[in-house]
Length: 342
Image 1 (cartoon, rainbow, N blue to C red):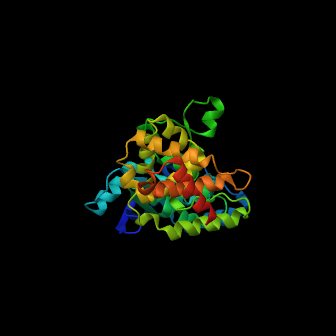
Image 2 (cartoon, rainbow, N blue to C red):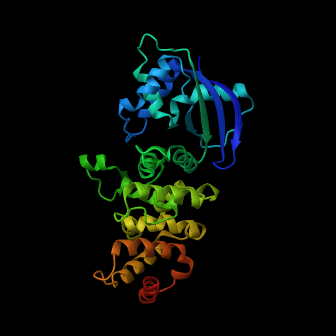
Image 3 (cartoon, rainbow, N blue to C red):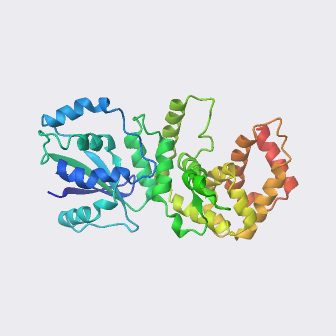
């Protein structure tokens, strides 16, 4: 048996088609289990003892809880029929991602050679077909938010590298692994872009806070994601990356955007000013951020947390760039002074 689709529905929140269907344990091991290795930085498999009960129950004939897969399509798909949806699922499953069910699939694979393994047992699944990568991340976090092994920060880090098309951009992006082998001059750090994506997704520039216990910080991040309703915003992060790519043709703008705290602020602020920024020539943006830096250098580093204020002020600057772009560095410093005081 391959994948047999039963229903097709439209999820209005994540603006995606959701197919429900079934396959068999054997097909899942051969065709779906390999998908958990698609991410270069994958979630660590939990202690096998944690899943002993599920393993034993499967061998006794229990029905494993459904899993959730995802497929990214550049264009919105309209399935003419259930048969069409089934054909699509089988033709494209090798390009899928496991949104929920990685531990279950690993458990299933661990007992595939057992004499009592029920290879023909039904495995139910949901398949989310989306043209918007941000929607998939939203769904992934809502599915996994109660699971400790993969934090929302880790999920975003993983999906940033896997889902976004950096090859279509002129800027180069390097992961820590790549940088360990050979640093490319002028390349953006993947970890910085990941932090920018997290800021974009949570609408917050403060997702790293050592004063708060890590688990509680993760709870705050998930709460921010739910509260900001990113899926209602028409702007996608790929558009933000394309804007960064465009501005990076100006050396001053590129240098400014390569500073992690500036990029974090930019990724939040751009949600309020994208239409204006998308029409702004790179040279004008470069001149504007050069004035930002000149003004920022006048802030007394001994009196404030510079990283915190750089994130906050870069966000405000980008949010209100229509009003602030005409100010000189002295006028900008006066604006910063008022912001710091408040």
